[in-house]
Length: 203
Image 1 (tube, rainbow, N blue to C red):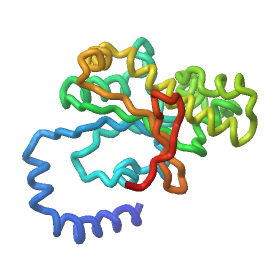
Image 2 (cartoon, rainbow, N blue to C red; image 1 turned 60 degrees about the vertical axis):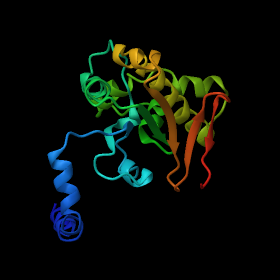
Image 3 (cartoon, helix red, strand yellow; image 1 turned 180 degrees about the vertical axis):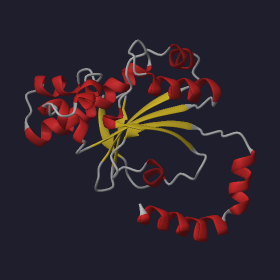
């Protein structure tokens, strides 16, 4: 905890001192992010860092395995954030970002220890990512990578079960994006026309 407080002191000394006008503007205005980012809680995957986004540019939801439970499921925190982002903030993009090496997805494949019943219940919300990987007869690391990708696609499908999302999609006012982050620094983006994830290239 001391390290965190030291880090905040550095933040105040370096960032706040140089950006006080920017922070004052943020504090006095209603937030207006362009995108809702739904990602994994993994400490190695920091959405603002990998997208070089400033405060106020992303509305972020993070949980184990970047899940979006369908609208009829009881876990309401993701749905609440989703409704707020779409109906109150009017975001024009929603990104579901998984990552290779995701421990949550690995647990979907291998099972969850009995000592973590809440995690088991949460991961039960994931639908068919690991099953799809098994059906395609891949094993080991390849199965894990494919399950990560399939999990992202499952969550994109689940987004459409929310009436507010479907309404904005039908109106052409909202676009959904599927990403998978490589912990070595690369980003793979789902290409709908080609039906696969492709690594982005430097602009």
